[in-house]
Amino acid sequence: MAKEYVKVRADFLPDGGIRPLMFRKEDGQKVIIDRVLDVRPAPALKAGGQGIRYVCRAEEKVFYLFLDRERWFLEE
Amino acid sequence: MSRVILHVDANCFYASVACLYQPELKGKPVAVCGDPAARHGIVLTANYPAKKCGVHVGQAVWQALQCCPGLMTVAPDYGLYTHFSQMMRKIWLEYSDRVEGFGLDESWIDVSHPDMTLEKGVKLADELRERVRRELGITVSVGVAENKVFAKLGSDLKKPDGTTGIFPDTFKEKIWPLPANQLLYVGRSTTHSLRKLGILTIGDLARADSQVLKRSLGKNGLMLQAFALGLDASPVMPADMDAAVKSVGNSTTTCRDIATVQDARCVFSLLAESVAARMREQGLKGRCLSIYIRETNLARASCQTMLRRPTYLTDDLIRGACTLFEENFKNRLPLRSAGLSCSQLTPATAPCQLSFCGEEREAERREKLDAAVDDLRRRYGHNIIQRGNVVLDKDFSLLSPKEENTIHPVPFFAG
Image 1 (cartoon, each protein chain N blue to C red):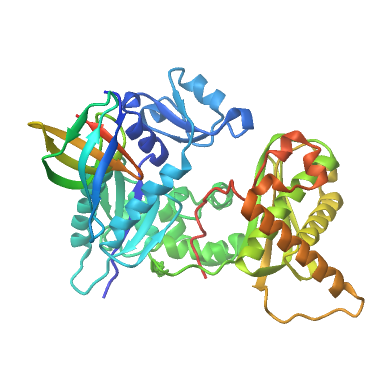
Image 2 (image 1 turned 90 degrees about the horizontal axis):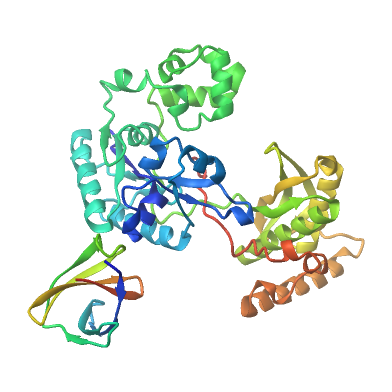
């Protein structure tokens, strides 16, 4: 599975946390995140890489959104 | 209270991180290698499938490809390895503030506590391994013992992803049959000296006559025997304690051989510039100047001299290094690499004996010049201003030794 870097809009919380609100895929499709189910550091075994993994629910599907240093990527 | 020390060693660190970022490499023989075009073409780390084919660290890339024709070679990404090293360190710091790094991929963690036992230490080590695997996606091996030397030895025994406890009542059965070179600080030359004394295993070293060891290896012989007996009492340096800097140095393997005295002057100018700039940055002056060379057949040599007074001036270091080179190593050209370091450091603000011969004004002038060069480089990059002899040589002018610093393990004994 190719690694897809995505454009993300997020809230930067007062406690230093980051909550992604929506992301835009490479093909331009906009996905609004309904809920963040889990946040923890984890490896991206399919897409390759590692980062803070946000398990997000959007459009009735679950996405893994990773923040690897300054960049966000997606693992479906 | 007996100590409980963990030594954590990331398995095939560079290669594991490379495979994590390129999942298509998983299961294939992989080696992270320096750039052969820049003559840094050696294996830096190989993963287990590559090691099975005979690939090992320090081997030339062409040799590695001969051992293992399907070997996938990957260029190193030090920024990424440093990031992983910091993430691991962050995990260790959750368990103890006494964490001492040894290179990017190894750390000692002192988890001693009145309630802590070696058995609990082993459980904790398993927890750390599990966390690193789950959070970072790489594996580590952990050694648990009452001292740093045995903990390090333990982390080498079960690879990958294993915990080894070394207990005081069973260490003789476990450790003593191992070859002496598995012990920290027993390198190639010490192994050779020990072999001449008939010492092949760690047990032989422990049982050897200490007078014989002292005669042959000096006080290091006694230190190694103490290590073998489990008597190492060196502390794990706390995380926030920076070891005092003892020397500032730099070395480089040039992209082509250093063939002439002119080439050597050029390389030593570059190295001296970087070392002097770092000393100025850290507010230190040095009195003892050492140079180091490596010939094309990989033979090494070094020599040193005392400067007239402590200095951090680029010109002083260049002049000193070139004189040392011409007096000692002129006949050993061509060279593959060269290095320069300055020790016997004192703070730049320390009082110093002034000279009657008017040298002070000249030194002051050159200090201003160096400050101006530092400022220019800080603002516009290293190559904004260069020495004439360096500019004339296209191969060497591309080197920027100050920026291209690699991180090597700090010595075991800080202080």
